[in-house]
Length: 101
Image (cartoon, rainbow, N blue to C red; front, side, top):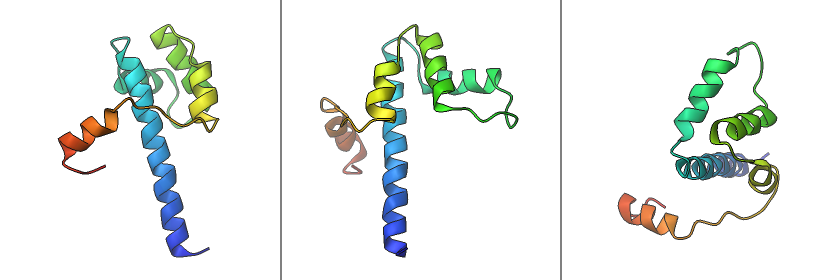
């Protein structure tokens, strides 16, 4: 495989993961929570290194801590290919980061 292709593929995967984390954090913020709350719960309630945390585990934890059903979100954005909607968020971030995006 071409090194340039590998590099671009890794960047795309990294960006998608970062984007998913961003979307999860934004939705958690609506409930007075944030992505750190998710990570803290996972760390405190799963035997680190003894059991791999699945996507289903993460969805169930999000359901528990937020009191909402995250099935649609996971079906659309995590497992699916639905384009994300930002309502101008990137324009705000671009302004704050002086062109990073």
